[in-house]
Length: 419
Image (tube, rainbow, N blue to C red):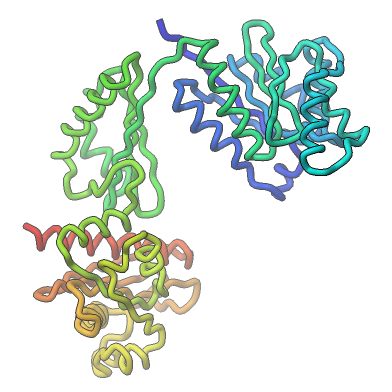
């Protein structure tokens, strides 16, 4: 029978709480634990403070089977982890000859003399198992106490990862009979979380108990994460795929990809498969759509180029938008984005012309055209498709949402062309 194993991650260091260093370790550790079937139930960040650390140790011991600690193992006086772990487990710091030799060799290989301060790195809690750190001076310490496993590692990311990959993960796999956990992300765009939930509610209710659904909304998109639990990887993967096959007919127009396939990647695949190309005319999005497109390797095969005619004069002079249209309808209008998409497609000899114009904010809005009003258009050479968006008061959010909506309009136009 496979065990259900919970873990807690404790990140130690004042610099994390001050925001001077971003805690990337916890994210990486959570992902690695998930891969082997250990569920992270809590991530805690604690400063270099004795009481706070002891409180964190006590709390973690009540809710987790595995406690993974990073940081606080340096040779200076502000690093308290070793001393507190020794006290917590009722032991004392003792010289570990193997640890001393490893530290000495590391300094020797770097042409440096081992100082008394760094010699102190070889003093560890007497009841720990010394875990050799071949890429740094701070040792790893493994404890088994009261049926729980504790692992203390340096906060330097490459040192922590070395210890996890070489020592900790193999030891955890031996210590527990772990379940199989299988994830699959279904990526959707063009529909909000609540509307999506309504469309798939009956399917969701019929999911078996060992397959769970989570909604992961982000700006302009919603990811559906299916997670299967079991004992056989292939069987769980197959069952998850069967559920996805039942889901797809319910929301075919909203699903654009799976797992790590972002919207720009999906667009690239579509255009590449069809041997088609894209040109952009961006006003309010300011080149952000082009940035997303060109962030994908191989985009030169389908992206011909673009223009950012931010000022009205250049919409007319460079792009060829009618001055009469600009005067009559204004830059933020359906008529203007249609001309922008039409003209940029022709100028760049592309299969599709995609355009945006709007009021990103926070200023510039009027009663008739408020902040957040955006028009987008996509021309396929025969017809121009448009969308009117009413977004937020936040400039950065509006730029991002405009890009997502424009790329989705392009996706829909390409797919409609394929029918």
